[in-house]
Amino acid sequence: MIYLSVVVPCFNEEMTIPLFYAEAVKTAEVINEQFEIIFVDDGSKDNTLNILRQLANQDKHIHFISFSRNFGKEAAILAGLQAAQGEYIVTMDTDGQDPLSLIPQMLECVASGEYDCAGTRRVNRIGEPPIRSFFACCFYALMKKITEVEITDGARDFRLMNRKYLEALLMLPERNRFSKGIFPWIGFKTKWFEYENIERTAGRTKWSFWKLFLYSLDGIIAFSSKPLAIASVLGVLLFLAALSFIVFIVIRKILWGDPVDGWASTICIILFCSGIQLFSTGILGQYIAKIYTEIKQRPQYIIREAQ
Ligand code: UDP
Ligand code: MG
Image (cartoon, rainbow, N blue to C red):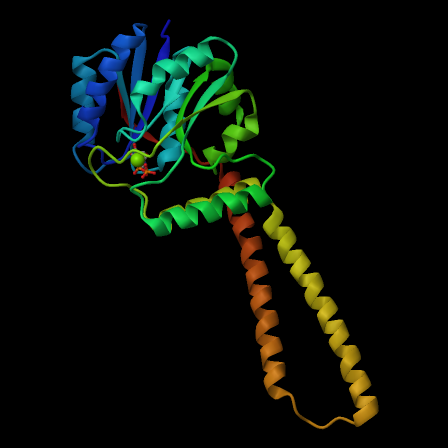
């Protein structure tokens, strides 16, 4: 029986995989139990797949799954979790931002049976562009307000879980997978490990600002229906405003007659209302688009090669 499975999504990580592998071998010696590392090549365009083939041929602990194209990190993690055989399962990045040296402590804490999952969070964002940190903080504050799940600020995808926890995770069939929300949604007992932000060992981040922005929208839509409520409330408020305005106009007409003026204000009101309407339809559209992708039931990833 395999004791520990390590699931590692990789997208154009030719520079970091050899470093990661060297570190992982050292950690495995410390743990001294049966283990496997499952690299998931998320449609890399560089030499990642060749490196993985080589590692898998020379070391029987190494397995890899290679996608037919880039399906995104969430899909890569899912594929690895579905393939994992271990009693305990870790998900982490290759780039050295998730310290392998924490695994023995995390393992001890979950293996003791007191916790089902060991999560990690970084306590600061040193080394990250300030504008990115600012928007990340806004996102977490907003998520706290509008979702029912407790999303931990700075939580990373570096986690160690037991089989029970993994099985619960895999029961969720959704295609729009926002794991920062899925983990707290399934519950169980999680112990948090904290560490300072560590910069990548090599290579560049795969997340552009735009990609992160779309990802945060996905998260909001997946875990909250509040935007729909906001649209409805805006509608009611506008209706009430219009009603008071009608009363005002009628009274003005009775008291002072009706000189023709106010074109500018009319145009402003029309623009304002149609803006709100488009905004609300847009919100509705986002939810419908998500329903559409869910209902198509397409696979979350397609495997081209595995070993
Ligand atoms: N990744 C992936 N598919 C993607 C983007 C990223 O599998 O489409 C992997 C990447 O190879 C890395 C991890 O996800 O192992 C985290 O990516 P990155 O380090 O670029 O993100 P950051 O740490 O800056 O949030
Ligand atoms: Mg990283």
